[in-house]
Image (cartoon, rainbow, N blue to C red):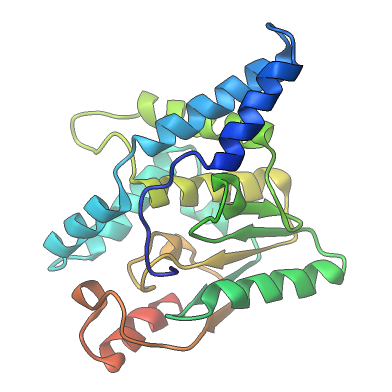
Length: 240
């Protein structure tokens, strides 16, 4: 369900792929080591704060939601990227209650067919977490995921101190990782789907989207976004 953001785990397909690689690749082979490292990366990702606990925390901090954006900016800076660096990306930012994922997928496919190198960030994933970050319509490889995950994770570890939370929550971490991938891969354009709401969503650290889109609105996450369509529309409109 689109509104559900429970903590992902290894899928049956991922476990099968790992087992088959272990059978086919001799011990010590670089591919086997890469897969092990990928598995370690996903396990470590799954130890980050769950979306459910993040939502509960967000409810408690609702009185000052701007803190959410300030925290995201701090995480971005600690990761080695400044908000100004994101201005290099041509981003289509899409929110809504229903259909925002499909809108992003259609948009990315159309632009890719025109010859653009595209990035795509969406959630949740269906089978593999790599589906959330795509280049030219394809989930990033296990090798690329592993490389960017550990680089970002270690960078955040190295820059933590008593004044800041050591690690971002699951969705925030993947948002940061997506920006790093898009910058390194030098995509012509990135389609970015909002997680929840818009105004205070972690993706709204984007300052200069080239286009903003809003799919159909409805009553969802009312404890965070408000109990009327008007209040929810204000939250969604926060990406403009």
